[in-house]
Image 1 (spheres, rainbow, N blue to C red):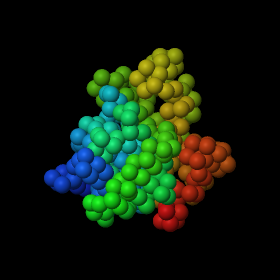
Image 2 (cartoon, helix red, strand yellow):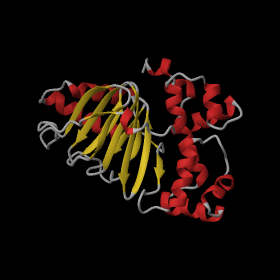
Image 3 (cartoon, rainbow, N blue to C red):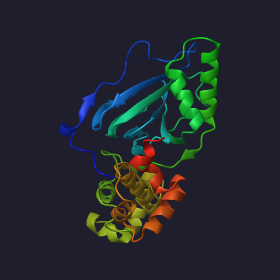
Image 4 (cartoon, helix red, strand yellow):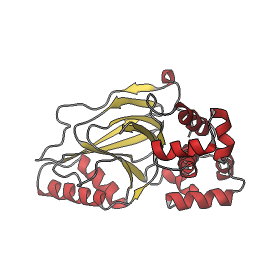
Length: 277
């Protein structure tokens, strides 16, 4: 995953905190649309309600902090991030995007949805979100809200985030290794090849991955590779170059890994395809 650009190159935009935005028991699902240019940055903030965030076109990076762990998601139009109440999050737009946020009142929030997750956005859910933008109070609006929540509840979830050790309380050796992999996931493939640079044994770092991030190195590295590859594909880079930049010797091996993880071939996420979603 490319490192975020220096703050000076990002354009900070305010988040919508208007008084009529908040969902309520009377109108428990509220949808907002917003066009944002590449490099737009919505600073860290949180809401009292749950939020479903996706972009109808373009590409965005959503970083959340929950339970002391910071996780970054690269979100193409076919995916969305579920953010529970009071979870801090920020957004960086990687490609010009049509941002859609759906705010949900606790009265309709699916039970047990207390953790961030990535949801696959079906064609029906996408159209329901768009319909909510122009809806007015009434029976039709109530039906659209209920169906939208039901479609979210039944959406397929996907592990598509890159967790990072806590900046202050996490192990500095683990964070240094993770940052090095994020800068260039193709440089090395095995944990044993990375650990020498951070002054820890392979066994120690493997334990840190389990204890702090709840995963193992290879699973974490695959998420880092996917997050690295998605922006490159969205910018139209040939699959062969993306594969090489991701540490794969062959296009076919990269495409097989990508399709198994994402459910679709890399070509599906290239600019020419995204524009037709």
